Length: 285
Image 1 (spheres, rainbow, N blue to C red):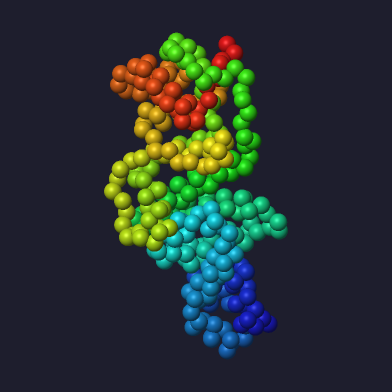
Image 2: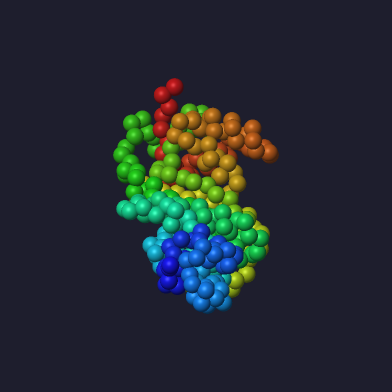
């Protein structure tokens, strides 16, 4: 026959058992594992506190997350979500826990869980956490690309100066590092900064859509965030290192309403090349 202590220990290491215990303690304890006196004491225990303690253990075991998601952590604490979140995550943590697992894998697993967890909720605090989490994940991934990407060397056939649109449109633009584009319903960098500086007021920002480019700048080995106009983003999303500028222009023109002129594209590509975002290479065709 098990002791109360062993049931408590099992509850902290077996989230499925703990959830069953909370849902129906009589049924969960109906296997003769406790004598009648101990069982009666357990039935009046505050099992919510036991679940909260399980969440606290899980939170402490994930302190490494906050190096990558500092603003998300601040918001979870601000809204009082941490313990409930980690209590819910405990089952996922236990089921995937392995020795010597890469930290990156653990971080991605938690991010995916929190993304799904916050997206299911409709309340503004969860919506705020969801958007800031997307922002911090994109920033973290940009930093990861810098670790995996060597500093660029000079590209054979690259060119720094062109004088005409006819010359420029034949070139092949290449991102200097990595670039990921994300659209938000409001600027998450503002909320993230306010959270980190502990001046966040808890209010959801007004809807003001923004497109951010998360640039892993391999020349400087820095992750940068670019605020982009829709036209700039529509061009960058087609830059893959293989397409020539003329091909990109054709795709953007087909998909974008309005009258886009060659000089609009020329000015954009020249300014991005000057800023070091793109390198322009001579195509082989």
